[in-house]
Length: 273
Image (cartoon, rainbow, N blue to C red; front, side, top):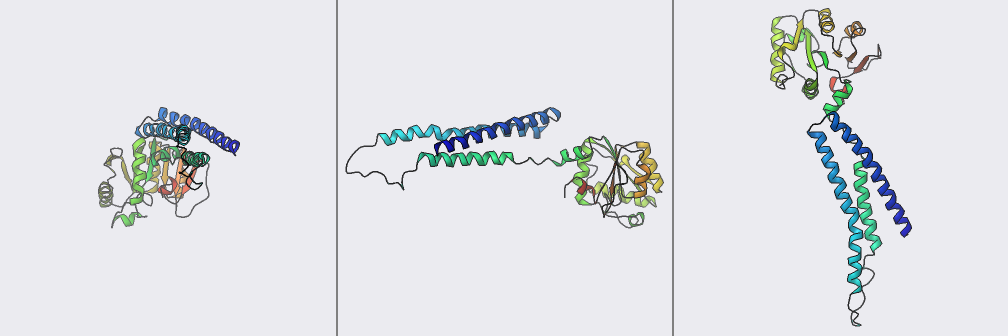
């Protein structure tokens, strides 16, 4: 039984050592590439976890000699009966309990760390630095220029993703409209939703045209790394000229080219819903 406990402890220490090696390597790599507050906090958190786990694993062996000493110095008075088995906890049981606690800590740290939305956006966009995106059906609830003549509604679920994109990408929004009033409604709706407050997107980067070909022309002139659209014809026309495209459609479509991806929404593509 003692040998079994030692073997379990040895395996626990081995797993912990291997985990620390991999985790520290990953965190150091993350810190070097992106030395922000999150990566610093992750390194500090791991260091604290290592320290407290070490204390937890060390405490049983440190407490046992003191326990044995107290038992050895108990008075040998014949009138005092020896403690019963129910009141004495064998040292092996304590060790197993502490080992189990340490194992739980290790298992907890073996759980994969969930990446932030910003990290997902960077990964999905393959570190692209310029993005163009149509408004209808992607940023706005409306799906046609005719609807914009009546109202403009910004999709609340897309705002977090949109703001993450603007943090490290040069983002241009564009749409076909039928009149100047529609342009004004769109700009007011975007401003009220807080799209322009982050500093990454300004009104001058919201472009309007009168035809679908006009939007395609905007995209080709801007030469983005990514273009996001709902019109399959525009996607097909631009496939030869744009590095990557995202086709947003309610029903998932077959990929028309190796550089064209599809999703039911911008949020779904980045896994934020």
